Image (cartoon, rainbow, N blue to C red; front, side, top):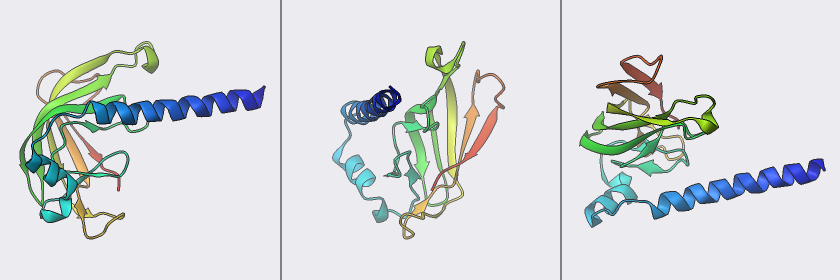
Length: 157
């Protein structure tokens, strides 16, 4: 019986991962050829990249998952003011699961934010590429419970 439960859990995880990957790809916004080239070839710019949960370099992404493990916090509708070698700035929305009464039954709430990226450094996967090392969110109106007006997180390598 235990083998059956383990096998079922593994299949469910694989199915969810595939669904997330397909859902993300099929829901991707239409971009201009210039934006596609900019995202596909981050080495052609002196600006740093933003490394996503799957360790892919991103330049000016429209969306970004902050909570890679469970997806309970993500940035959406990102509109970039600038994207330079030392910093980047955007306005967007932070969708945060309130996890009430627990995360699986929680509600995603939208909070407007200003997003700042900084602390560029070499990317371990590809040392010739600079990646941003920190992300800061400034909540411009309401914010999630127990969150400061500005929160900063180290970004993964």
